[in-house]
Amino acid sequence: MNIEYKFLQKAINDKNYISFSYENKSYKNIKPLKLDNENRLYSDKGVFEFGKIKKLMILREKF
Image (tube, rainbow, N blue to C red; front, side, top):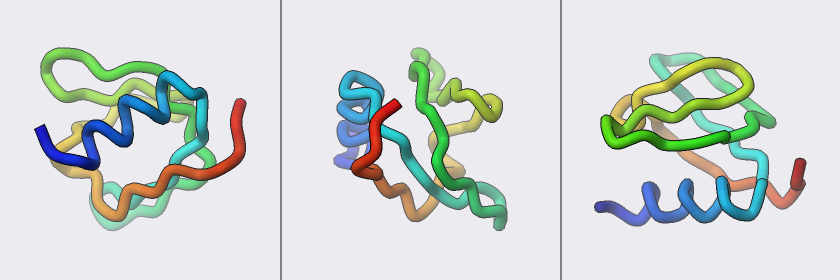
């Protein structure tokens, strides 16, 4: 388990917005809802594979 995965879990628990790039597309102010056992991130903007997420940033704003 890498550190980005742990940060993402903490962001979900703390209800922080996140931003990241995914398949050469930038996503900002995403609400992370949950991570499943197959490393898929469920959010308000869709489902993302954690392995394809790059430049993950945890934002200070909460939802």
